[in-house]
Length: 436
Image (tube, rainbow, N blue to C red; front, side):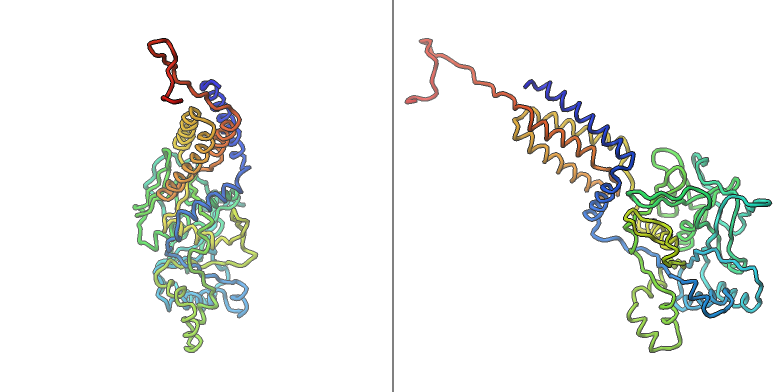
């Protein structure tokens, strides 16, 4: 068969395959398989997840309420137990505030709050209710180094819940959630999580960014927001966090379990005056407990009924655990992104050129070349991911290789060109060798 016809058939069928597969991928048809491919890339590129600098301290509100103490005293006990490990930074996820005054409890809590390093305190943002909206940013960090279009950032109409004034004596408030907005979407890369919000004409960081700032002593003027170009990002001290234009970034589900997690009951026993019990527990949980001295300690509720987020794997996690995963992602730089469109299209073009080159050969070489091309693409994907943590769904490339394989089997091989027949001086065709 004529080579030009083969090449035309290959390019037409390959283009159709790419368009159909890419359209289905946009419809999330392949999400399950994309996640499996990403997990395979992670498994081949990461020998282990780098240690993060965050520890989740899980508190059960039902256990705190069993002693019938004022809730301020309960949280004073939590901070007192933590104080024994001299933590570098502490963050409290739930937005704690109390209407009922209690001078004794207030004094006890204030004493513990002041003894802590600067706290990161959870706040809840939402839409306005009745009356005048509350948009007071006092007690929050305000970011000023802003570049690009800020119009797509979540707009806060009201501050629903702020930490109690006793906690604010040694802390900064930052939002852990924005009510009445679309739920953060779960995809193959993980869960999208907002890092910025607009309050009036001010831009404030999320709880996650505030934890990083407190843990690493990063002032607000060292946080640079760049929401323009093909690679919008937030630069926070030494960290570069890729974000979407709406200020969200993605937390990879594989970060779950990459950091220590401790029950408050274990911490309380380890810090108790009963030395025999405390010593046994400290030996059994030495690494986790020692992490409280150096890591950012995030305190939050983590009970089953509070696991409101679904990972792409179907497993559910709490807001406190998601926040800890987000902090760990920034600390370790494990930001998984997609290939730029130009690079993705170029890779398809390279596969098409290789396919056109293979069709000049016989059927066996075309078939074996299709498999070799697919293996080459897989190797390049691993290499790119290992160096940049960037990937792309493989199905369009797989479609091109499949078209190459099928046409290589079905289309006839090019005919061999016969050597020209030469004749001797007598006009008799020459033979190859004497005695033939």
